[in-house]
View 1: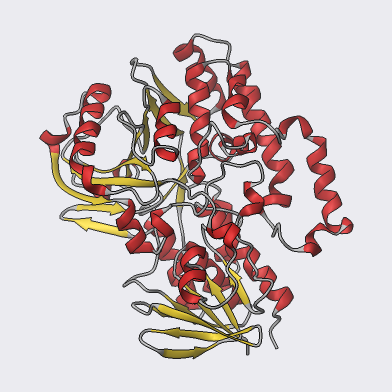
View 2 (view 1 turned 180 degrees about the vertical axis):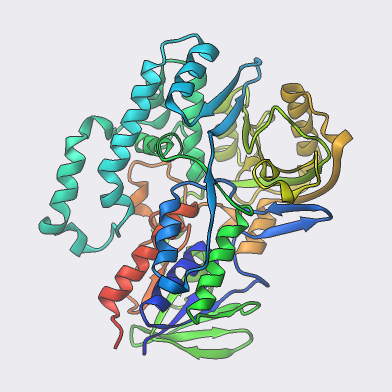
Length: 492
């Protein structure tokens, strides 16, 4: 029987472990922390429960597919579709609700911006066409396997992409492409989707315009029980399949001999033999710490990191009726915010503030009439938290000015995560949330491949490798990695 060692129990590691075990492999998963989940863990403060990491759930079919691969061993998972994706607030008092229903969205655009909604609707249609034209080629398979670029395999995907060539702005910047919306505030709204992989919309390629389709076209969803329900379902499914999950078991070395993995060393020099090793950990520490003495992919390791974040978890005794599950309070100068993040390596004086209130859809996560606020601003990877008190005060003033809610009067508890905390807790290089940023035209090709070409039996999954960060892409990385494993390391 093929023995697989998976490093890291994040979404990528768990999904790979499930698929490998369902295929009949013996899988052992090593997690350095005390619990599974990676960035998607949870926190309890008194009567409040918080999801520590990702707060947006899109493309649920990928999670359903992962669970379905386990057959009767799949754990149950339920979710609901939301009637809106986000509430937006601008400093000039403009407020906009991004409704899921196209008719309501059209009316909202007309009412809020006093404009013909047709340019926006055409922009969304282009996002859908671009997504459908490229998903099979760039997201749902490895970009780095020569077999995927053989004419018989690649030509059908390329022909499909070429049919939508008008929707594939290969040489444009996202900010320039989004001018097509016809309104500067809507341009800013669509620019935000670059932050879904920690990038700068003023430098990122316009191909990122396919991302809005995930929300506006496919929909925004909420897991029953909060985002941690995703981890619970994956965890229970893995256990049902017989995956040996070892927490508090940090891997210290990936053993390699004669160009092939032999296993891992973990938990204070304990050896575990394996014919296949999958690293679901961040690619940078994987190479720098676990593969010392082996060739380092310097182009990958030296890539510009994505943004990190500073997150305040506040138990708030306030119902916040004007807020929903997802809320954005815009910066006055969005371009200056990204110049501060990437050039200045600091947080802008007036940052955009994201507020997630999980209790809006999972009321059990906070007392009645209260809310579990997840308040985040983008931060440079490695940001020094010495200015945290000043940042908190600026955020509080912004929230009060734009929503009328005086945070300090209603806050009953607090927890904070900074980039350094995120790095220490998850092993992410400098706390970068999405691995390398996508600020270059060929960024998709510059991510770490899912199969190491030089070390046989070594694979990669998770947010720092292809196809990218975020729950949907981490699930895809698990599927791609398992497919490559099946092809190159079949069960003996």
